[in-house]
Length: 334
Image (cartoon, rainbow, N blue to C red; front, side, top):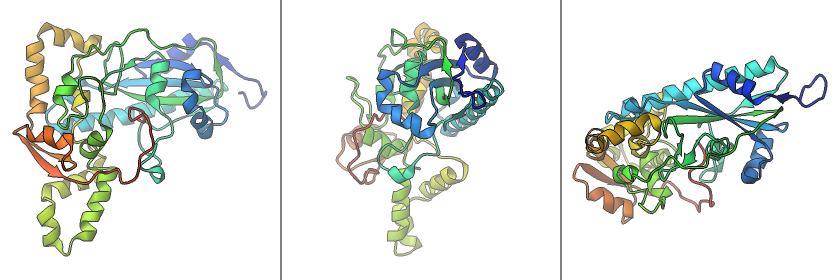
């Protein structure tokens, strides 16, 4: 809405798409704020920006080779770098729109989040369902949005604006996920089952060990220790250093292998399809066979799966979810 004339601005979809791409987006789609399939998110849109009339969904690609590296700091740095890039892109788009009399705001890619709600829905805007409605991809069994061109090697963000758009996008009518099950094979805690069942707690316990609930356990370990020697008898120096690294330089995922190994999308499928055995040998196995600690809850399915893999050292921890967690879409959020 133009605040000077009090009239609703209507933008042309193609001009707006061009503007977003010029600002650096690798993909963009548009959704009306009242779309029925996003009814559960409607209150959040208006809570964040009460004048919201349209949603702009943005994708920014990451480098698959970096994400696939068994040297995980390479993958994590690529994630952090692309997060910064897309954050700059959405701000640039908003500023360009401001010159056209359109107001709005860019939302966080992932963090910061509302940790006072932990362990409930700690994010405000769920980028994944918006991206799906905007025609930018469909959900794979690894719970990542898979774009037809870039596969799941993208990050997502959303802009809320006070203008209407003359042509909104719709979900694509096919799913680029072709059920290769490489994500099932690569996950060190078996969080993804072949039938598509997702073990949210197993994923949270291991992959997010250095942040969210895992940090609470770190504080508990310090508080419960009688002295430094007692603390170090239960927590390795490497684990302490890993927490320090995440606090200092940005939270690092312990795995993210489901993201790394996915060969869907035009840019990767040809490489995978040309020599499937070599793809498994050079991408999947180095991650699956990495020597690393695996954080799992005692007697859980995740523990049993991790113990089958000779290069994994199982570390028994408490669940990071210490209160009944609301029924949320565990694939939402970032």
